[in-house]
Amino acid sequence: MKEILKLENQLCFHIYALSRKITSMYQPFLANLGITYPQYLVMLVLWEKESVNVKELGDCLLLDSGTLTPLLKRLEKNKLITRTRSDKDERIVIISLTQQGKKMEEQAANIPLQFSKHIKSCNVNPKYLQKLVKEVTGVIYQ
Amino acid sequence: MKEILKLENQLCFHIYALSRKITSMYQPFLANLGITYPQYLVMLVLWEKESVNVKELGDCLLLDSGTLTPLLKRLEKNKLITRTRSDKDERIVIISLTQQGKKMEEQAANIPLQFSKHIKSCNVNPKYLQKLVKEVTGVIYQ
DNA sequence: TGTTTTTTAATTGTGTACAACTTAATTTTG
DNA sequence: CAAAATTAAGTTGTACACAATTAAAAAACA
Image 1 (cartoon, rainbow over the protein chains, first blue to last red):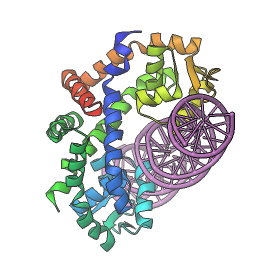
Image 2 (cartoon, each protein chain N blue to C red):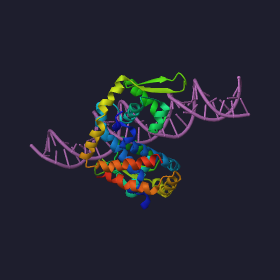
Image 3 (tube, chains in turn green, orange, cyan, brown):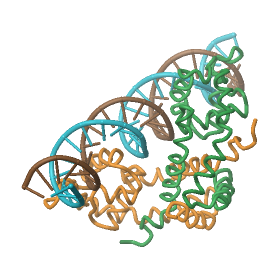
Image 4 (cartoon, rainbow over the protein chains, first blue to last red):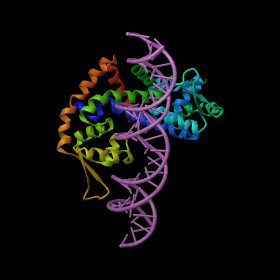
């Protein structure tokens, strides 16, 4: 077969596989909180900004309303956020943290450290990964 | 908020976002072939090995039968592959390329080059990405 | 001002992902 | 050999992703 088509050479595949692998490594920690990985990303944004609309959330996470609307409805159902239409602009839906959602930040605070320990136990060098972060960030936000 | 919880600092998020971005960049080329990105990965394995079983495919792509079985049924429906039970071991399903599936390799051969041009037009440095491949490979297959 | 355009979310439909479970076939082992 | 354990695919249910479309509201503009 053509060398250029070999799976090993496919940048995309390795990023794709790594992404799923990292997500699965977070899973046990997030299961304790009762949220999924994409839901965790939404919570990260809210802990940072307190309240955002769907558009802003989509800009932060590079996701569209087709993905976010049902996800946000699930977070609302689990009483972690509220969804309310803006008075000034009826098109806009504002996402805010509930008390329960705010309180979750405390429990989440130790996840990065736990994850880093977990990575170490998998013989993955955390510094290696930190270097990756910088490079990947550069690729996404050129 | 706690610095360690900021989205910017989340390795996982950047890998996740990059993975989706790369997949979307492949999409126009794959649409010409009428396949999706995960289907393309399966085709890559088959162009390399001619024929594999579901287990082997899962090992290559780090996917389980819950993902692969319906995906393979779609490829079969589109007449790109065949699925047949092994005679020696009735548990095993062998995936093989059809003539049409084999022929697709010709059209696919120019995708990596086109993709590389596309990346350039997005001001992403291909060498940067090539460096990433090596590092990411190292992380996945420690 | 009224019409066109743009913006924001939601909806619909298709296709992954993956955990948990099932079923059937093969291996292992007492 | 027969019971137990393991293996391979498939099934079920939940949750993303995302293209394409819709609907309503706001902004732009002729």
